[in-house]
Amino acid sequence: MRGRRRGADAGEDAPADAVHALAVLLRAGLHPGSAWAYLAEQSPIVAPIAAAIASGRPIPAAIEDAGGDWADVGRAWRVAAQVGAPLAETLQGFAEGLRDAADARDDVRVALAEPTGTARLMLWLPAAGAALGAALGFDVVGAVLGDVRGALCVIAGIALIVAARVWTARLVARAQPPAETPGLEASLFAIALTGGVSLDRAAHIASGGAVPDRVRAILELSRRAGVPAVELLRAEASRARHRARVAGRTAAAQLATRLLLPLGVCTLPSFLLLAVAPLVLSVLDSAVLPAL
Image (cartoon, rainbow, N blue to C red; front, top):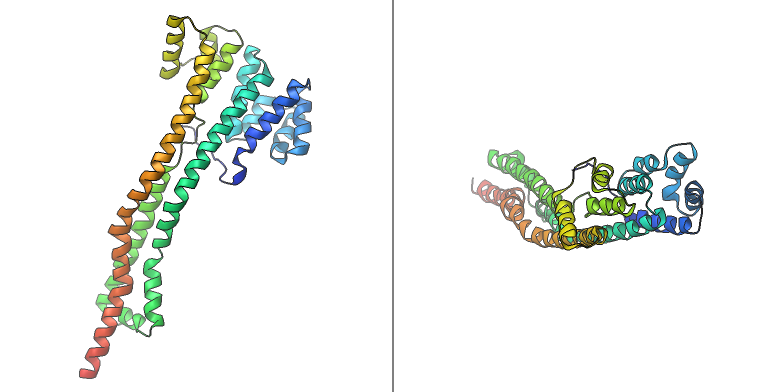
């Protein structure tokens, strides 16, 4: 898995929009360098790429240097250039794939927002309970500092809060969608075969010579059925994006249930230790001292 940073803001689908606009400019007959320059005037997100191209950096390398979804665009550009595939049509189809992938990530992000926000809010419950007790006039600080039992409760409660935060963060991280664009390898193979090269040449250009198992199965189906492999590969890329969206939604739905574990095991006991226990000790001390 390649480590990549993806934007989390609402403009995450900007690469797809920019690639689509670029395809339109290329279809109109503009030179790639000029198309990037014109696009940079309208879309600041591509300005660094356009500047690198203007300085003499090869276009695929300049795109890949931008990282994120742009790295995939750069790979698609490189494959299309090497096999002589129509660049405008390649970018048009790739933009649709990027937009589908961005929509899938947005769906997962929206689905994760509620359970994640609830978990973070519940982590403040122990501190809120302690503050409420102090506001009601209970000597919470005295119960903690003046009693070994209170100090032990605070230490245990803080440890549980830390454990709850770490546990929750790991659960949320596991529910996040993968960084890779779903169906990327199938899309790259489809682009390579569009240029009319042999299968071995397409494998070398698209993935360095290795053929992923799923792509190999599709190519075998194409050979046995006598149908074009390009359309089958494009369909597989579309299915991969759909599967990624369903898997992301499922993970988000499961997260809401899994977050109950740190809540019940760590957060609620820490509330009892940090808020309820000092209040009880304070009440007991106030009842014992007058008797003495």
